[in-house]
Amino acid sequence: MKKYIFSLVLTFVAVQFTYAQDLNGFMSEFSKQEGVQRQLVDRSMLDMSMKAAMTADSTGQMVSKMPAFMQKIDSIEVLAIEKYSPEVKTKFLEGIQSFKDGNGYATLLSVNEADDNVKIISHKEGDLFTGVYILVLDNEDAVIVKMSGNLTESDLTEILKEQNKNK
Image (tube, rainbow, N blue to C red):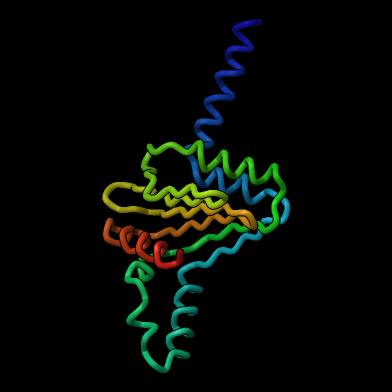
């Protein structure tokens, strides 16, 4: 009986560790929470949006201010929830805090100030970064943004610069 309980506990710990290391799994779990809004913007939608914005920009400043990495993004997925329950906040915060680098994932930025928690994580396959995850939790909402594409280190630097501009 002790062996059975030990095996069960060991399996539970392994599943929790794997879950913490898989941000796509974390996003999937988060998306099941009541009140979560999900938006997926694929490459064709990004192209249409950029084209419409540039057409509407008579000054031409939009093109000069567009970060170069945006051309390499294949899709952007956003999960957001406003006015979440304390349980959702706890799960989200535990997910952010329990994440450990490894298996191609690396934390680029982590900020924990008062009620604001931000974490930017990259996912690397071979020589390219195939995903960037931005996780944000504050007093009013929780947001996960996943940008997928084939990015370089300089693209990641640009993403961090853009994030710092928005503070």
